[in-house]
Length: 127
Image 1 (cartoon, one colour):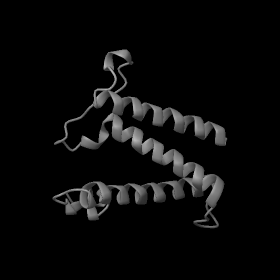
Image 2: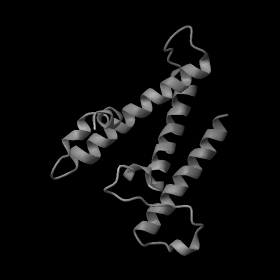
Image 3: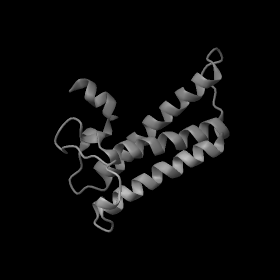
Image 4: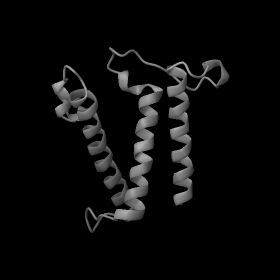
């Protein structure tokens, strides 16, 4: 099963790299299938473009492999093993993306966006 996860990870990371190379102008977009999409940066759907989706998928695959093969952290004894692994993946994915947002939107920015101190799914509940 690890090989299937690795192949999926390679595919997603390759997809991201092609998208990045097209966006910066190194490669031509007409050489590739129309599998990339963009969203308005000012809309509530700004994080649903192909770059964000592929980044999220890559992170999920990495955590799936880490938790399934390395950590084996039990959440509750009565929860099935598959559900337990998926809950761990979800928890680590949320934490990963939260820390990523802190670096992207607070630490690296000249004018920090402090709303990213709170995880976005919690922030969006109060909007």
